[in-house]
Image (cartoon, rainbow, N blue to C red):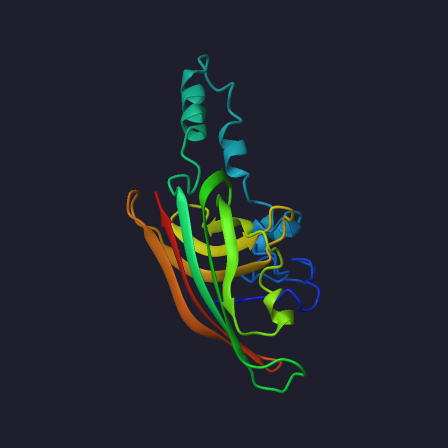
Length: 227
């Protein structure tokens, strides 16, 4: 089930603050990373083996008199294409419906529509980042809700695509303002298998988030990655 987290929700806990949080495959502090992919868990014993494999493999530099084999192997590994580098463009259309199952003063059922997109600007260990736009196109909601999903009128934004460690599965999307490192809105928890290079991939969802404290969010989203 996709998890949408509102910005006006309670303050997030630190990932790993409670036993088992670094292995429960849940984003406990709602920063779009979970378990050993979240820096809060890097000191946990559950994540102690993450990233250690190559260190052991390369520690035998004295095993033979020539260094050609080790040098070639390391150079080849470093030359591998970063995860997600072949996706050059992102486009997104998003419709968000707010359904209040309990009365809230000043708020009623309403709908917002958003769109965005961008060109890839960088790639890190989690996936590609796209520099572009993210803006509200239409809304019949109260003004208080219109600044919940996106608070910047300029429309400039960064989009991050989260991929699995092997780069074969797409697991999340988030939007950032240019000034902030924390996502202002994100969708995660899904799994979309990526096709071979050269084929655009589209993630579509049309489902409600379960009733929480008198609110159901129904989101309809289409995100496309292309070369």
